[in-house]
Length: 134
Length: 142
Image (cartoon, rainbow over all chains, first blue to last red; front, side, top):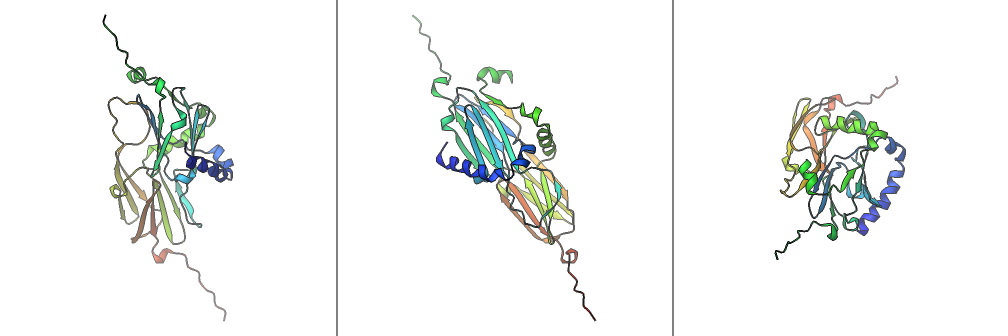
């Protein structure tokens, strides 16, 4: 994780503390695709409405937590008339296998689409064993 | 599915267990998934604001049409095709063509529409016609 993300994480914890009570009850689970190759695992999470500053990615031991707050920049006097998304917070957790290298996760956010690449550690990549014929 | 699991060690578990503790969360997502993209609508004194949650799009590929009180949004989401050696462990995200037709809560002026795409949310601002905007009437004393 780079320094930039760590800063975002700290900032975000402060931001979300105000809405903590609501978030505990109503959080959205971002819809997720997961692809796995010999190189590692790639996750794609749909988190529309979340900007880079409102996203936090956190790893505690082998649990990956992703959390983001939606900011729609709504006018102050807006009265809701129809709502299909009732929460302003996305949250989802994944438990990672030991063979994944959590130190080198790459994260990119593009128009509410979060892509995370978690590389497989070198010693865990599948290897082809050559059989010598004597 | 089985072949995928054989090919790679399953190195990732979704913490599904939380659904047991937060059933509301799960239900909410399923409902939101039934129509794509989900939409929130709000009104102010002079505008109708429509928000569509539609991540990862090229704004040029979105078509927005307004006709009287009907607002329709259509487009196609094409998720990247994966190479053969890739195992798809989980696929939940929407992929393909979509169209949503929304009946607006109030009349709008079809000539005063703004649309902006930001962080994967399409925000459409429609102005109410002047006649339907609330006006304050001054009471004069005689």
